[in-house]
Length: 242
Image (cartoon, rainbow, N blue to C red; front, top):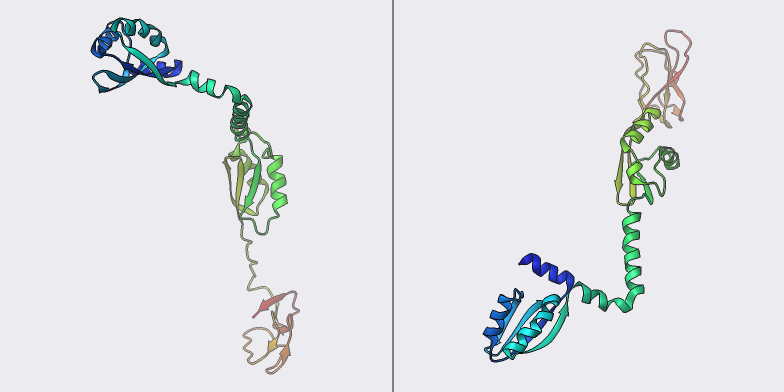
């Protein structure tokens, strides 16, 4: 029955009112002729409203004639009537369908590329490498292998610690975590100068090794050598101290 009602909606149905003194006989004859009536509402003994398919509506005229009932169409419903309603608005319907199709079509492509997380690495540099790997404006998302692109870029660059590519809608979002630079390791056994990293006044000197070059009360500027010769040997490079 549900399938038949659904089929009636696709093919079209009407809501009708039936008036007469033999409503019960009218209903019984519809049942015997396999005419489907649904959403039936009977307000009075001589009046009712019901739904019937277009196909069965042609058969019901004979039943109404035999039972001396009068039939009026209240509303026409279903897909055929809905399409007919918009028949005069063909341009609107076509434009709407074109918009829906274009939205569904464009969502399969990349139309925006965003790079996040880079501070020292140049954005254009990353963008160029991403483009070379296949992520460009207008690229089809199904043809982009994000794992392969990430692997290829990280093998070429030591300044990227972590990278991800997220294809979200029409956006390609590239997130980067930069590698921190390794601090310079100074060999404690290597001879060096100790220099100031800013200007100031010497208030105390405590040189365990090497020869102090300045005295207490001296005014020094940045890069001034504070402790120089060590055991009378020549100094080859500077070491910055506070």
